[in-house]
Image (cartoon, rainbow, N blue to C red; front, side, top):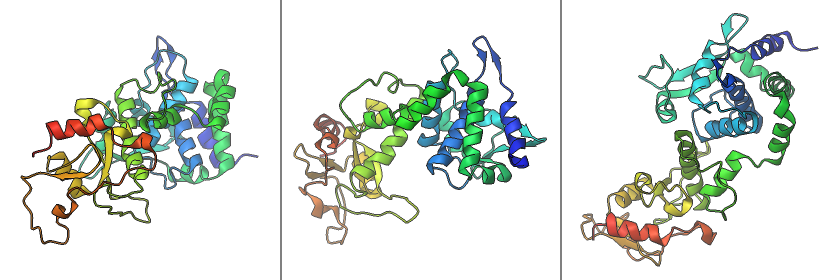
Length: 320
């Protein structure tokens, strides 16, 4: 017999208020709930704090592509805000926590703006505890699928078991893997760009072993933070290229120097320093000692910085 507390939330899940459109009832809220449960299932979210990041937006997008055949717009920001209006036994079960000094009083339509304004969304504590149980998550997932997407449930579960959906394809795209069918992942909506940029920031440090490619500095923490930056070689606003071949891992001071043209890279992957650099050359961390040093490169050649990108940087940014 089901836990009475769980039943309360399941009743709310099957009675979601959904907007009426010319394409039918809006599917956004059930897709978001399925995505939130999935992130708990994967262990991606363990503290009931759902940040607006690449994992959440990509999971929502992937589930949308698997479950929604209509022409509704896959706007992630809409259910993320409006799910707050849903109640279980008269009490909201979803809330948003704004960043310090900010307010969220209305629907923020830009995913980038939402990520800057909102620290995280979170379930009501009782529901969050219930969803830590795998059986409860499975019951909730199946109920949502049966209620809102019964026609596509079998294919959805099959696709999830294979683990090759939107997020997987997008990661392969960013990693510059041989081109497959990327038609569904390179659409330049704001959400697609947001996810690719998030993957770029996560994958660049990873393929460089969390080391600065120029200094070799490696710094991370037991909390999973890397203090090595993912740096675009040709700025994204110029190239719209977020593949790892347009990136390099740099510690923050080298990142700033690279972006300001005080450091660059030759076509044989050695360090170049600008004549305009002013520093104490006797200092332990003086950049002068790095001149003509070979940079650290990823293990796979397919991930090496693209020569066309570093040539562009020398010709357009580097101050020699």
